[in-house]
Image (cartoon, rainbow, N blue to C red):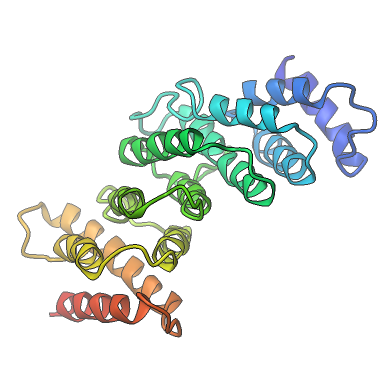
Length: 279
């Protein structure tokens, strides 16, 4: 199905409040949506394809096996890793909206579990690899809409971190992968990326499986990035310091009233780094 035909059909479906009553094979339509999930048309990609997926997954329209198939398709080389490493190209839309399918699928799994330990391991591996590989961190592209890869990937991390299959080592891997995005040195985030990343970090910490040493080492890693004495160019150093500092401030505010472990410790560690960065 070409993009024009798909858009026309989805507009009709949306006019009926996303009812599937007139759709004989919702899953077949979903496969067509996957073909165009990276469209540069923001209405088709964001308002129609993504919203349809999120709504139907939430309503239980797809079977558990169909959800698993959609999950693995979203994570394959033609979707989550399509053109990964490129900067400033339209391939980013495919990656950005493929990773955004993970949260509703993981949410469906929390309500009625169907993903196995191996499935969660696969998601963990693909997602952490993607976070470390994605180079295009633009937030919004005029005329084409949202890319927002750090935010979208962080949403996926937030949902994945709630899986009971993830142990401390896996959670630490998620933190390390997010650190790559926190320490971005190519641009300053201006589209609330810090908040979305912070939500994911708080969810990881709330599992309370990481010891003080692991948390301190992670915060120290960010502190080193915020250290202006590091041997980097002035511009790179400034961009990285700004992103790290804004993130740490956002994280501190997000946990300022959290009294359960490990949040008092995290507040202390974060505050120490912020105070040092002011000197």
